Image 1 (cartoon, rainbow, N blue to C red):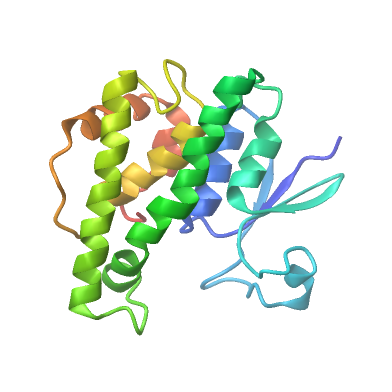
Image 2: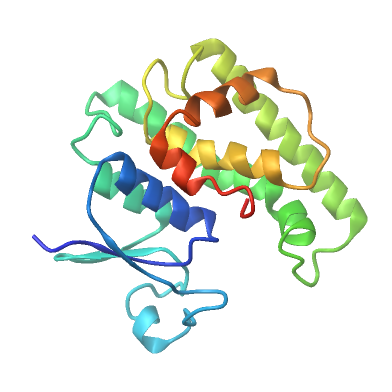
Length: 206
């Protein structure tokens, strides 16, 4: 069995969720920098691995896998991070999918304008609307954690906490006005007890 290789820059939240998953499982891997400031992802060699020209990509003896949440599920299959029980796995999937659709959509304009400084994302009204949507989504997550009292899918730490833990980190360290959600602060502190989270939650890179 070959050691898998992860292609992607660590400033990408999607790359970091894959690296956290691998470290959480104690799996060996190699990594190459690709993307902003490094090798361009429109290089034909990269596009041959991921036609979307986006990081991350994981390559093992079976070939490439792309889409960060799919990679996390792939490497965590048959481990407690991705439960075998049908109901519990559905809850993990549910919150992982919510993160990459609803939550990402909410923060996209504000994060692109305030943190990444991407041209075309500097309209104050659109930024303000994005911040409001972002806080609303985080309130939904907070309510879920009130219900479980521990982790997103229930009593046990899972892949859902990896993708959403980094999302909470992004929310806390982005230059926005935040709602006061004590449950999210407590959740973040629980995650900070995990060495792999401390490695990949980088304050200077939300």
